[in-house]
Length: 245
Figure 1 (cartoon, one colour):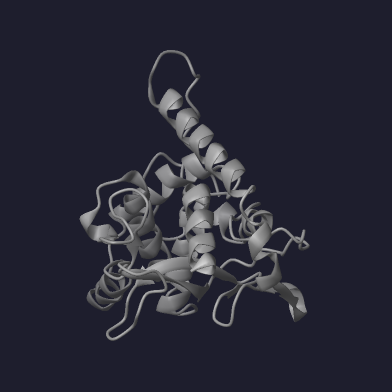
Figure 2 (tube, rainbow, N blue to C red; figure 1 turned 45 degrees about the vertical axis):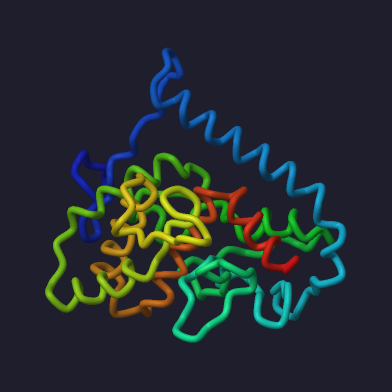
């Protein structure tokens, strides 16, 4: 299917936005500073995980168990979610809690290194191209282009029932590292960042094209998988914080 310049729509292959040349002080400079900041965070995290090693075990089928209720595998990721009614946070004062979520993409697990942080970087932060990548024109290996393309999905027109489903999903999905915080999580429909718009467009794309195949929770989990890619350092840091708590 040939790329087009139009927004992502049902079963359309979007035009891949070319990278900036890097000259001047435009978006390219901002994007590279952002990536550099994420690398700095990840390097710092790699130095603090020794005390956590005893809490991690490899389970059958290539899954990793961090605690009794936190695990991840090829089709399970981790993300903070708003507290349910009567639910207590692991960290006092937080109004969200990290949970395991089923995903749509199937990402082969990389072997455990025995290093908690490195294993999270290797397996919770996605890599490669998901099975729907060619159709949607996205790849985990090009997060910035994918972010722009998913954002175009906001133009997809939904039926009344599809819209109600979209409302349920996006109005319980939090922006944890940009417009919000653990103490004051912000629902993505109230957040104006590019990642929020991308997640909203992504939800529309999956509902329109694969809504009869995947559950709300799986669509939510796939959005979470992309958030781990867009915010790798903060994602790993938050998971480690809850393990320490």
